[in-house]
Length: 126
Image 1 (cartoon, rainbow, N blue to C red):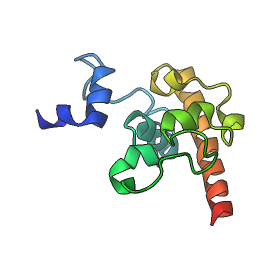
Image 2 (image 1 turned 90 degrees about the vertical axis):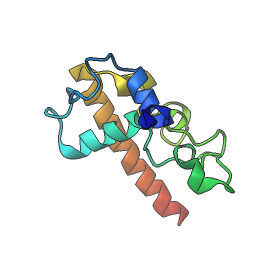
Image 3 (image 1 turned 30 degrees about the vertical axis):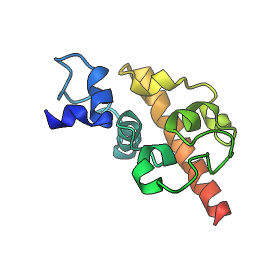
């Protein structure tokens, strides 16, 4: 099983029971497309942060481009980065991986705010 060696797939599989692997997540029919995309990106470690794309950033500094305090990981962005704290203050990291309606709804709304802040900050950097 080649895909079990890939870290992003392995992390998703570890979090699920055998019955849950391949089953459609509960949030998909309940949220709009953009919310679903945002949640999927976090769960699959595909959020646009430097640490998730290390192969593209081999010679670059992986420190957060927004606060320059820690490595730019999605956990950092979603929990401790000062630039996103206003959006993430009431959302623990584990909530992005839970399947109850309250958790995935809160996570989806938080991710939308984070993406809006990222876009705004990126425009200011350019």
